[in-house]
Length: 99
Image (cartoon, rainbow, N blue to C red):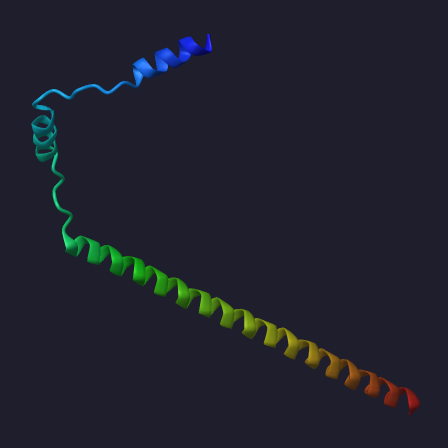
């Protein structure tokens, strides 16, 4: 059974001569299917658009980072203000209570 498989495999993989006009046919077909050259200016425009999008994204990320930092600073300022107002209110209440 193994020998039969090997014989079939050898037969399937044996060298086969190419027809005499094979190379000419392949070259003719390749010339007929030649792809039109991609204009370089289109590649340059695409690269510029990708670069502009990347710069735009970087600017957006920086703005978001600054806005988040400003928000955090505002929250801290409001907490400090609340603490100071609470302290002042307690002192006034104590002063009014003592009199």
